[in-house]
Length: 298
Image (cartoon, rainbow, N blue to C red; front, side, top):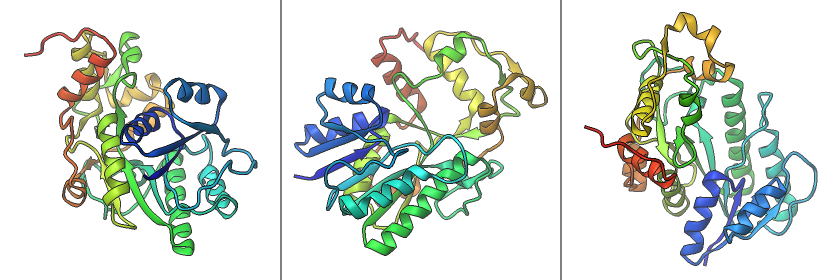
């Protein structure tokens, strides 16, 4: 039996925990809020409450565990103080045997639409991506100094049930026209869970994996495909020159970067076969689980 700890046991972590529990492994989820604790309890997932923004000691022992670090970084700044506090807590709670960290492909920055593999230099342009790179570097220092095994997953945009921009589409908010929109990448949440398990079990110590379905498209195409699958109107289209007056700061950040992710290493080194290798298959599952009508598409 494996002893699995999931730090930041939210949308992805809950699905990951259920998979391990079904296999008969020992699982403990760490969440920040009381509502998170109640959510996991209702799902039958053992959990404790621990806030990485505070100085309270880690509850229980982490010595020799297999730990997934899924907790998000702070909302501001260029350093991930949450990861730094987590690593500092290992001195008191014990060091995990193996750690899988969920990072972001944003650490590559703007690649002007180029195909990007794991050897592409990291040049984050946004603070939210700089915080993720800071976490990666913090964990690599921990691994070197204490011998814990580390695998980093640089994850594309996650979609799945209850993780689709349906409200944005219903509100009729505009998007940049396809010919000007940047490339974006994505992965279905269930495929991400599959990758997490494979990385923990078979990932080479020190390895980095891009996690995407290998089918990049423009962000505008992604939204239009969702609208069609859900039977919603297409969003209105604007030029990039008009975008700053109509789009949020967060959306403008996404529009400032363009890259296409290679997932070759994911397939070849981990032997992962995706359940939803195309957006059509993934959207059918996501909308179906939400109980939403999905028109037949030609």
